[in-house]
Length: 205
Image 1 (cartoon, rainbow, N blue to C red):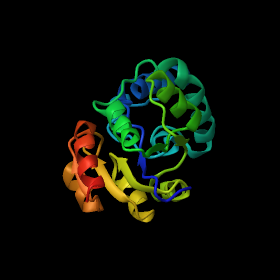
Image 2 (cartoon, rainbow, N blue to C red; image 1 turned 90 degrees about the horizontal axis):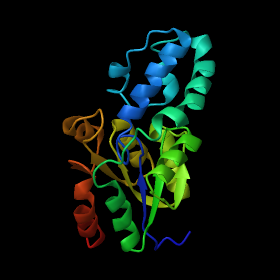
Image 3 (cartoon, one colour; image 1 turned 45 degrees about the vertical axis):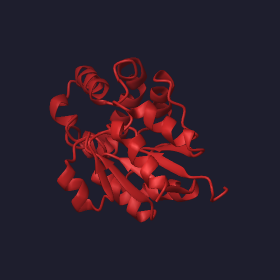
């Protein structure tokens, strides 16, 4: 890839999309389907890590692969329409494009479901890579030449740092500004509505 093209990576859940309503509804449906107790209100306060990590709170280890498959099967019909874009998300992608850059999405979410979210909301990144969490995100960021990565979780900060990308954190997920800064974020924005102005300044440095 031409190294002169600026590539910016974005996380998905709680960065580009407010996935809480859809995920909450999906956990409620999974509990009803399986008879298991799942505190959906609690589960949506710790979004970010892979699905299997959350399911481990509610199911025996041997059942987690099957429950993950069932959750992902149920997810499109329950969660996609219920999930809105985060404020400023389309504008953040547009700001990268307007500068002649490439916008990619690197997420821990199951990639087919991540694609459905982006299509439903009319957001069209140049690339989508799913099923990567924390430091593992660095593999995709390096592969696509991303020099900036935007996310809401300390795991996203670790992924950016591992890739030697500039870490932009948004305080819209489960981690507050202090946690994000302590994890090593280069800058913390209140939300993505502040991204276009920050990005303009960053490009001209």
